Image 1: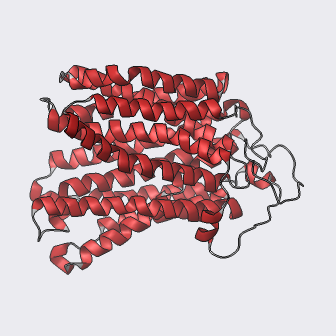
Image 2: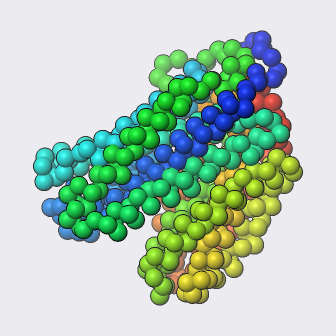
Image 3: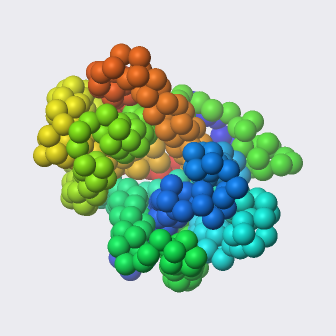
Amino acid sequence: MMQDSTALTAQSHPAQRTTRDLTKAAVSGWLGTAMEFMDFQLYSLAAAIVFNKIFFPDVSPAIGLIAAMATYGVGYVARLAGAIYFGRMGDRIGRKKVLVITILLMGASTTLIGALPTYATIGILAPSLLVLLRLVQGFGAGAEIAGATVLLAEYAPVRRRGLVASLVSLGTNSGTLAASGLWAILLGVLSEDQLLSWGWRLPFLLSFALMLFAVWLRRGLKESPVFEERPAVVDEHRGSVLAAGIRQRKGRAFFLALGLRLGQAGNSGLIQTFLVGYIATNLAVGRSVPTDAIVYGSLLGFATVPAVGLLGDRYGRRPVYMAFSLLTVALAFPVMFLVASGSPAAVMLGMVLGLNVGVLGLFSLESVTMAELFGSRTRFTQLALAKEIGGILTTAIGPVLAASLTAVTGSWWPIAVMLVVYSLITFVSAFLAPETRGRDLVRLEDAV
C-alpha cells in the first residue's frame, strides 16, 4: 500500500456540486473522449484512403500505405509520454486545468492537419509536418480519457458513480460513429479528384468548431471537488515531470488496474481491429459487413454502457466485473464460430455480441473501478499510465499475434483462445481486487 508523506488536514468528504455542475462535467467528459476517438478515427480512415496518395505519392501504393499507417502509429508512442506528463501535472495542479490543455492540443493539431500543404506543394516537408502534428495529437490524447474518467468519478454522487463515470465510455462510440459518418458522406458525394484535392480536409477543419465549444465548456467547469478537498500533498520528486512520473512508485493497485485494462483493450484490438480485416480477407462476405457490425454494435453500446454502470452501482464492481469476464470467456468460441460461418447475419450477430459484452461492458466497469482503485494523491498519473501501457501491450501486439497464429493454423480458433486469455486476466484481476464501490475518493492512499 502506498504511504502518504502528507499532513491530513482536509475533510473526509468532498464538497458538493450542483446538478448543473455535474451535468457540465458529464458533457465535458463525454465530449472530450468523443473528440479523442473522432480525431484518431478521422486520421486512421484518411491514412487508409487518401494520405498515401497526397503525402507519399513517389513510392508504390503498398509502400505509401505502410508509410501512412506508420504516421498513424507514432501517435500511440506519443500517448504514453502524454499520459505520464499530463497525468503527473493533473495530480499536482488540478484535473480541470490539464483537461483544458489536452483538448487544445488535440483540437489544434487535428485542425492543422486539415490545413497542411501536400507533397506536391512542399515535398518531403509535408509528411514530416504530418508526423509532427500526429505526435502532438497523441501527446494530448494520452491523458484525455484518463483525465475525463478521473474528473467524472470525482464529481459523481457516490451511489451513481458507476453510471456517471460510464458516460466517458460512450464518448468512444460517439467519436467513432461521427468520424465514420463524415467519411461515409464524403465518399458518397465527392468524386475521387474532389476528395484528393480538397474534400479530405473538411473533417479535420470542421473539428475546430468542436474544439472551441469543448474549451469553452471546460473553462467554465469547477475543479473536481475531490481535488479541492484533498489534503495538501508534498511532492517527493523534483525536476522533470516526465522523469518524476516514470520514477513514481507503482503498488499493487497499479498492477490490478493494468490487468483489468488488458482484458478490455485486448478484446477491443481483436474484435474492432483484427476481425474487420480478417473477415474481409478470409471470408466470402461483403467488405462492408464487419464495418457495419461495428456501427450497429456501437449503437447498441449506448444502452449497454449505462446499463452495466448501473449494475456496478447496485451489485458492486467485483461481481459484475467477474460476471462479464466469464461471460466473455463462455461466448468466445460461439462468437468466433458465428463469425467464421461466413453468413452475413451470423457475422453481424457474433461481432455485435463480442463488442458489447467483451469490450463495451468491460469498458463501462473499467471507467469507475480504475479511478476508485487509486488514491487522490496519484490517481490521474496511475490511471493514465495503466490505460496507455495496457492499450499499447494489447492493441499493438494482439492483432499481430492473432494474424500470425491464424496464418500458421489456418483456423479461427486462436482468436477465440486469445479472447479467453485476455478475459481471464481481467477475471483474475477483479477477483484479487478489493470491492471499491462507495470508496471515499478523497483518501490519499490506494485501495490496496
